[in-house]
View 1: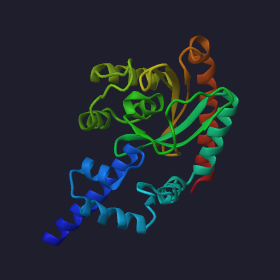
View 2 (view 1 turned 180 degrees about the vertical axis):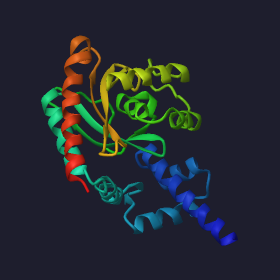
View 3 (view 1 turned 45 degrees about the vertical axis):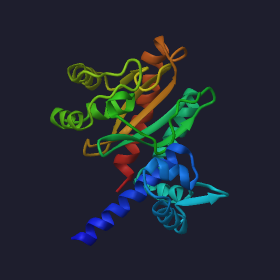
View 4 (view 1 turned 30 degrees about the vertical axis):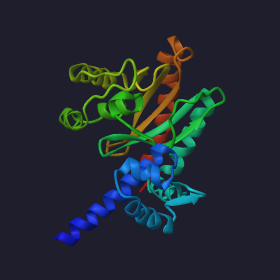
Length: 255
C-alpha cells in the first residue's frame, strides 16, 4: 500500500510540474522548484524523466514542454470517429462566415476545444485546440448543456460551479436553467461577452443517430461586428445548416 501511495505522489508531482511549465511558458530548475516548493534535486529527477520520454525539452537553462504532448494530443483528437468530417465542417463554416469557428466536446464536465479554424476576418479570441473551460460560459457549451437532462446539468453545476469568465457570464443557476430552456426551443445558443469581453458567439449542439450529444459547433467574433441581424439570424442559419449536414454524415456514415 505504501508503494502505491508513493507512486501516486510521484505521478502527481510530475503532473504539477507539467502544469507549472505551461503556466510559466518554461523556466529554470530554480524557478520551477520555487513554484513547487520542493528541493531542486527532487524537481530535477522528475524533469529528467519527463525529458527522457520527450515530454520536456531543455534549452540552455530553460525547461519547456516538449512536442510529445502534440503527438499524444493528435491521437486523442483523432479517436473521434467523425473527426475528419468535423474538421472539414469547421473549416468550411469558417470560410463561409469569415469568422473563427470551433467544435467543442464535453470531458470531465468541462468544455474542450477539439478543433478550431479561422476565417478571413477572424480575430484572436484565445481559443485553440485543447483549451478547456466551463460549459456554462460559451455558446457551444450552453448548447451541450441544453441537450442534457436537467438532473445531469444540476450535477455539473454542483461539481463545477458557475465561475465568471466574462463580464456577462451567467452565475445564477436559475438564470442558467431559464436560458437552457430557451436554447432547447430555439435550437442554438448565444454568448454575448460571457467567455471573453468583446467577443460574441452563436453555438448549436451536434447529436448522433441516438440523439446523444457529441459536442457543440460555434462561430465567434468581435462583438462590434457580430451583432444585430448578423448575430441573431444570419449566423444561426449558417450554423444550423452546417450542423444538419454534419449530423447527416455522422448518422449515415460513422459506425
